[in-house]
Image (cartoon, rainbow, N blue to C red; front, top):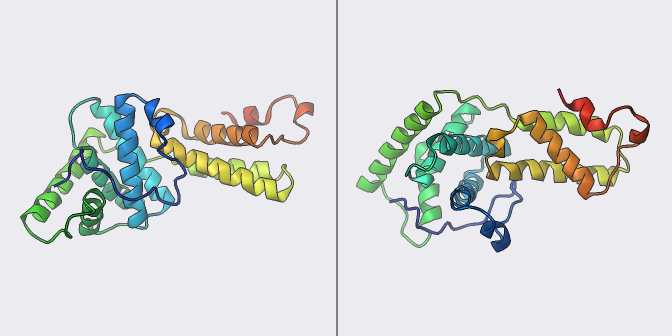
Length: 230
């Protein structure tokens, strides 16, 4: 069966850039560490299931929204992650077989055990996942539409890249902003922050980190990011 005490095997998938360094994890609270660990598990399963980065972000958003709603109540975080993946695939119109979700999650949690056979344990996991998916929907009051910040980020990147130069640095800027936005989904920022503000923030941080300036900004009445804020 699934267990919160089981070490997750595998590395984060290619569309997530965050790393679980001791320095980062040690600075988190107990609830934040639990959430971060679950997101790493979710990320590993998403990579093995070959999910798109958008579907992965939706599943992270579902998990964080659910965990925020239930608070510190005791629940199986790995079953919550599985239900979030299963539901996110339906929301993004990329359905996946329930047996694939269960088999991948089981092998991720128990890499040293034999493959899961179709037996009583498998049937119990299927029933649990279906029931947890319904429970998740009810907790979220069936408000399952995610205003994904990626669409705002693409709009901002296209506008900024028309001003920035040279081309090579522009590509680096876009990659960094995209990676930062993905990393935001490891925390509850994707739930607590407005998606357009989140996209704008990662653009600002990426420019600052790369020491890039928007040309002629000093001659404008407003900073570039203030123009984008509604």
